[in-house]
Length: 290
Image (tube, rainbow, N blue to C red; front, side, top):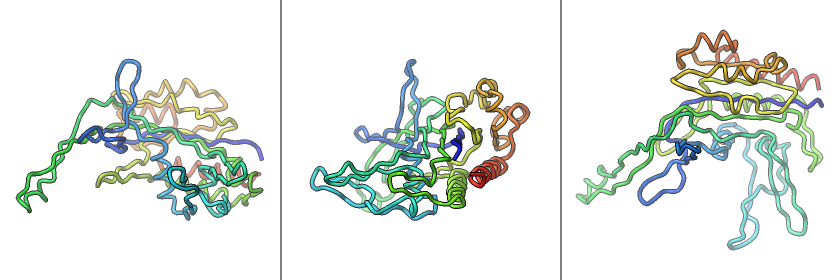
């Protein structure tokens, strides 16, 4: 099967969607810093993976607790395979077994962290349980929570030729099932959301660019950016080599960004449904021809 990679870089808008450890009574968002000291919040790839698996609508692989005490490890059961569980097909597995080297499959669907495109300014929300405390005429508890609303960017990279193929267990599923699984993944990403602290955050794309390529580089991961509510089109055009440009597709939610016309004219952007249907058609053609 000819090696092919599907990649797409997505921009969505969300608020306070991934917390780390609390500092005292302050719930702290996950953040990274750049060399100038500016802080950017992020949603970890593990969190995105969790939400994709949760919303994929496929059976979840069964797990077991191996070992004892502090060395107990929760892992996928040894009899689970990619044949029954797309989760293992997409994101891989590590199964340890006493007396052996175990079994390992690397991820074939890889995710980056979703990093904010706007800096965190230190905003916090003041939280109390006043409603409950008043019922008992008790003093209320007070806490604070960091908050940040921003555009976020993340990238998905899929090794299409390795989907449905597991050399460890000597399994290869049929082409129709491979295509169905990738279609299901694309449908999930198109309407992804995240439940956190009583909110349902919408993670569906507002802008997306990508395609199916002969190379597996996450082409647009470092060039998709937003400044002053405009997609930086020239930055994207800088990586559109002729062979990349020919296969690239772009999706846009109109009136979200201030340079719609530029995005449509220079990147041939269509609607979100058009983008995802075009990718599904490419995936179907690839598996049918192999």
